[in-house]
Length: 382
DNA sequence: ACTCTGCATCAAGACGCT
DNA sequence: TTAATTGATGCAGAGT
DNA sequence: AGCGTCC
Image (cartoon, rainbow, N blue to C red; front, top):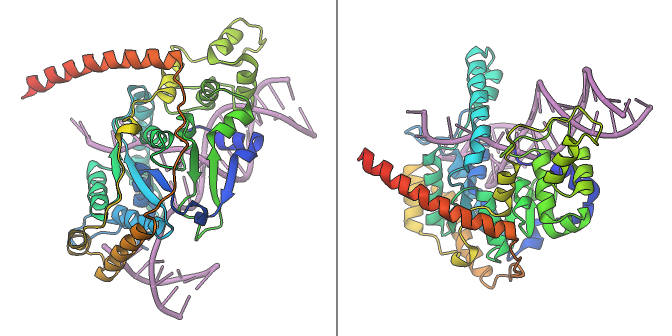
């Protein structure tokens, strides 16, 4: 779901935080990309006329590999070095949202069964697309052969992308997902890929400018996003984007807003605060997500493994050998020209708040417990 | 009249020839 | 049963 | 730019 209406708020209140530019201005930059989200889009969009996915002779889907291969080449051609980040396990707090999605999926399956026209069937089929473990593993294999670095995040890929940008390992997180701003990525790039062919320019959102422009701390900004609606918990019914911003500006935190509403001073009875509302946990997932420390990550772009790449894509997946070979030379050329690179990030250290430090300590303890349990379970099974 | 929320609906990649 | 999009847009309708 | 094709 991302954050509902966040882009509208920023566009309206802080348009200056969104810089519009074309792809050329990112020459020499490294960027982090949410791989799982990309794969999802490729699986939906890369189709034949009949609506079926691209496949090899064995019927194995190749749409995701197709999309990833050529999108990566396009970025390399423009001097942009991508690093892909794969999703890990979703945080526990997301399970409510996920079961909701699961029931929606059942509905879609019903609609598909009832669909009469081919067009209707195609539509419903696309809504049932899911990114499997195999899709992810195949994409990782492809990236490995192309010499493009990738990371498997402990939890949310967006959080890890932001961490890479914060530690100066990449210039920005490239994503359509506005969640990324909550993790305080220095820059968020939207529409990075389709800028050349389509009409939209690249939007470069500067998180610090957003905070300054809205006159909110990062904690207040995250609280705002929780009230707008995120994946982790409900929001206050009856409070939309306009009211949410007004409330956070006036009261400064969800705690104070809840206090204000419950005191009755708001003389407003329509606002319904969710019961057992875990907004504090949601807040911590944004402010201090579980990520691999960017300082421990060394991103490396290597020459492609030519023979294996041809074996995999051409022999196995039936890609055109001519196209793949041309792709290989594009990769080699891009690696050479971009070798000097640009300095990414300012290596600014944002001090952690007391809350963040406390949460980190707590989480470390929970992890210890969790690991113990895991050992028990695996021992029991095997 | 106006503002705001909430719901339904839609579309979603890249290449290369013409 | 090992996967669970999202954001933009437009409209209805409630509330002020 | 439009359109068939990629696999």
